[in-house]
Amino acid sequence: MGANDGIVSIASLVLGVAAAGASSSAVLTAGIAGLVAGALSMAAGEYVSVASQRDAEEADLERERRELERSPAEELDELALIYEGRGLSPELAHQVAVELSDGDALQTHARDELGFDDLRRANPLQAAWVSALSFSVGAALPLIAVSIGGDPLRVILTVAVVLAALAALGATGARLGGAPIVRAAARVLLWGALAMAATSAIGYLVGAAGL
Image 1 (cartoon, rainbow, N blue to C red):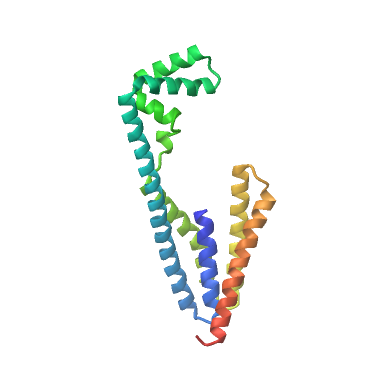
Image 2 (image 1 turned 90 degrees about the vertical axis):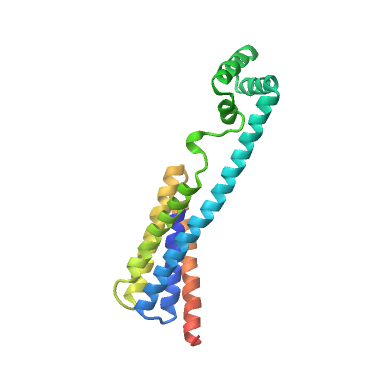
């Protein structure tokens, strides 16, 4: 998603500026500024979002810790009911709950009651840099394409590179998710093309008005 955002955002930006009649250096400057601003914005937004999620997880863990201290027997019964719901007999469910709780009761409740997994816990810094990196990688494609040649080659090349990249991303995402590849690629292509067409039209109108 980050790479897709980078491709569409920067492609739309540079095509809009180019359609306004700006020089190659102005188009490239706008693209670089958009890449930096977009990557930082993605990183900041992702950090805040994931940090909020992490805070909520920590609050849930603290609440569970207090409940275990106040009423361990009730929490043990609650855990046994979870295992019963997964198909174990009441006796076996109780035995499993007791044995797992003897190790680390909080971790057991966090995993089986709250659905937390230490390997998949929210990490704000990791989410921030991954988001910024994926956006930057995607944004670099239209930026490189628009820097090659002059009008109208740079516009044609940028559109071609962007559409090819969007189709590849859409198909890859669909294949990984087990969704129909053609439909996914077509959907990404349609919205990417509409975004580029809209910004190009706005840029042309702004340039024609001499603003």
